Image (tube, rainbow, N blue to C red; front, side, top):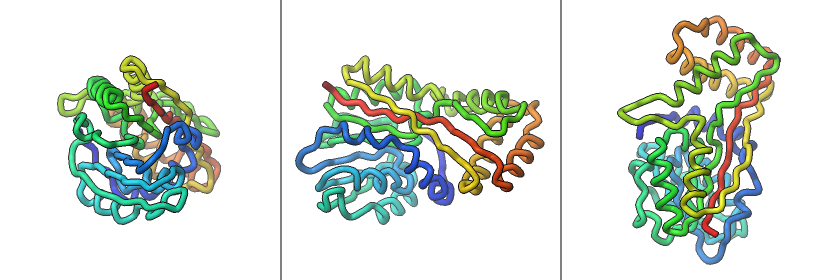
Length: 265
């Protein structure tokens, strides 16, 4: 599995992520004793910073990522107290998050990830569902892109750029066909088929004038991916117009995501 993310970008998006995540899904987790959370593709540890204070403890977080620099940063920035004031401890695992095994889930109370499922293939999501449900381990997957983006005010190229971006997210890379915006639907189907009860919630970013820096950085990446997919689109002019509106504080953007919670009945 490939994908590199800078601490700058992850830090820039963290407040919007925190505001977007569904707050009722964590309450569906059946808790008791030490809570062991395995966080896949942990990045800078934003999921732990958001979720640890929302769950009782004591907690033990197992942070997993391919990037050793991100792992070190995440481990140093996890809260030291759970929602009830009890302890939170951390360990790290460097490695591919698409190859989770039953041994990896031994003693694990919850598997989490954030903004990650779109980078999985259909087979990888099915394997993840099968191993988690077989182990009886609930999952909380947040902020998976669903392909829905709306702008206020609209622009004639919005739909074409969005379609090109979504096609780019479904691309083949290294012999793997990514799920992109179909990831949440595929995961919901796979977990249900494996025998879990599945709940999804919308978790959109709602970006306005107060998010101008994040909006601009997101636009550059979003339009850039669309341009890679559709070089024929007039994306330079489109991006310039959208960046100008964002800088002026006149652009509002809603970026669709979905959160998913699944646990065996």
